[in-house]
Image (cartoon, rainbow over all chains, first blue to last red; front, top):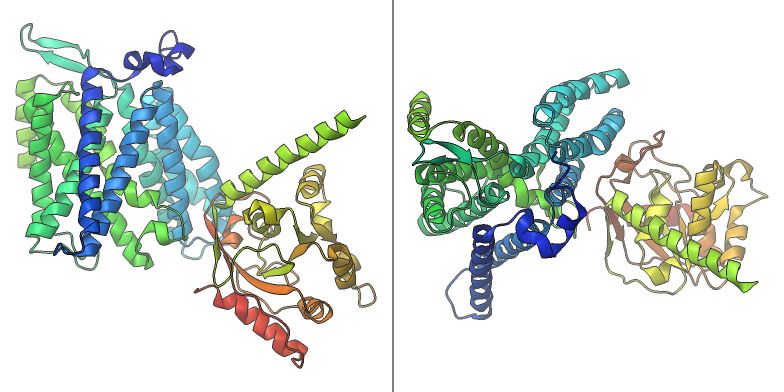
Length: 362
Length: 212
């Protein structure tokens, strides 16, 4: 970590916010997103009050709930980004902690798992985020998939409770992987050393824009994708993907959201660039994020259906289900993180070539 | 002379706030009142019992005004077992019962009723001990005698969900999972009801809240 400048107390004061994480473009993008969401929220409220409108009230209620959730996320994220990077890291750490407790509460474990689970909450979750804040890339990318995933089965074996051993191990590993490891890659984006391609000198120069650009891009694209999925499912959904998992998610929604997100990403990159991507890289990233976000929602839905729960929020009444809100970002974050790292090391021509060969490989 | 006493009280108030905050955070408890409302009238909350923290968490989840007049009945040998537990138990003001000394002639019921007078509500766990599996065991007769000697008290069934995973019997470190406390409509002892029927009915009232 860069101790001399980024860690100084003065950065904690909102008065210096532009110097900390956000630049003019990032602020404009945030304001635009907040504006659009506020507009949608108002429209939803008006629709709800007009009983004569021939729209299913359940759809409007779902829509309104989502808009409120997106708006809350954006407002909280905007506030955390006014401070130093570690504040955003702490914010995501708390979300991970809460999501993990929802996940483990829902997942049946046995008495023998108690102390293993204690390690999860008290050691691995905080350690992952501390390492992200320390920018220890080589450690935080392996601590959970390598150390924790070997530690968990060993610790359970040491307790001597063998019933459904593999099933219990897998559940705990999965929870830690999705709720903590995957999500921690979102704030880790703040620490990437970004470069942008300079067409004149034909070489990479350090990116001068906002530190928070990539994270903003990810969060906004996930929300755009969710929104487009919702709209396409309602308007053009004919072929449901898997009715047992989710009765409304359709192939039309998936494709519409993926290509719609790519389109929005390109427009965004053109109007208010917050990332060092080329326009086509931005488009590809939008597509990738959307597909991953849909996959995340489907996966977590499948787990919920298996457990016979509709929302993680109704698991224990009165709690807003954090896991319901972050399932898409959990899947998109690590893939976006690694693909970004990979792409930003290549000159643009090779970017195109490598993505083409990657597509052909699929 | 007044000042040190005042400071001590203030310290205690802050400690209580911290304790309540910690208990609420680590238990992730949601409290639901089904068919009843929080009320300052004298009540007996009776709940299923799976962990040593049950009494503390249920007490901490009550509204602040009710916390001040509600005393959990808890195991003296546990809560006086060390300096930290002793300090914490001083904060939530439990009625401590020494389980070793409970005899027919030395019934804790009289002591409890004497202590609460016409002022306090209490939290009791009629199973007598903590359940290992989370199943609700048979009720001991204490609740029946409370109902018989003080027919004016409202007997409130309470179901504690998931507490056995937060701190199972035999573990000493709590896990920060989510839990749910459901409080149901009060029951009373019918004048001509025998002990076993009443205890079965009370247990069923707790079990019914599982699905409420």
